[in-house]
Length: 175
Image 1: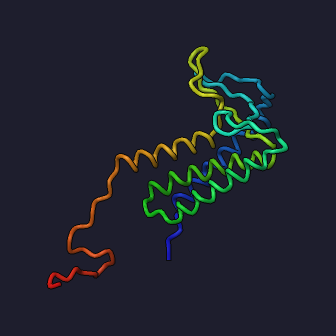
Image 2: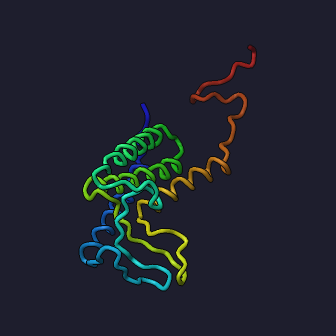
Image 3: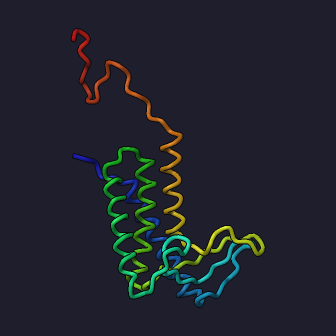
């Protein structure tokens, strides 16, 4: 029986809750109107941007067709959760949890609002290296980068000869 990927599920829950809390804060207590902005730091401002598309505003769809993106994102999130459940590496489970939590945060927005609520704008003077994004988007991006870095740079140690995959299993040297 497989163990529950606790670290990945915790990461997913943290990303989801924080993302939804910040979105509520932006439109609720801070009362930042659509396309309004509030400077937080010299290089960071909060905005209220309604994103009907996917990452970076690509594939914009009208609100009545948002269900297509919900189905697509939901299918991807399910695949990520299956992968996370099968993954044995705790680091990969956390990365997959970040992706799943971010996807779920954006799915909830689409179902509830018909668009994704974006609010974070990193800028240097008049130059913004990214479009306005949210914590869910950042978590998805960071999770994917962690998986890529680990896949390309981290190698698991190969099993030494004579060690079986099960405890107590010994290779027969007389064979």
